[in-house]
Image (cartoon, one colour):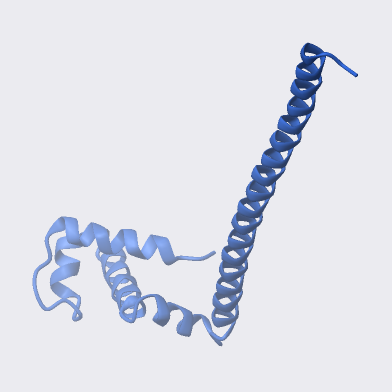
Length: 133
């Protein structure tokens, strides 16, 4: 039979093993909790990514619905074709007058008022954006 001192040492060893098992159980519980959180985060990310891809696909399908370039221009800005036509008319009159923009603005029937030079430049810049070769 072990002495009291030996019994105490054996008891401490048994308790130490028991504490290690508790630590392992706690670590496993924490790891399982972390895995659950990571899984939830991953699922949330995948759901968000799926919704974004579906939205992009729907927008791409909607863009394919346009049947002509004019319909596409009208969807961007309803007055865009009119602005381009006005700029083209102004450019033709300006070219016919040798580049005199002030006289061209007075002669162009589409202008109801005398435009400032910076407004005329804006029209010319707008025409350059839509010219295609």
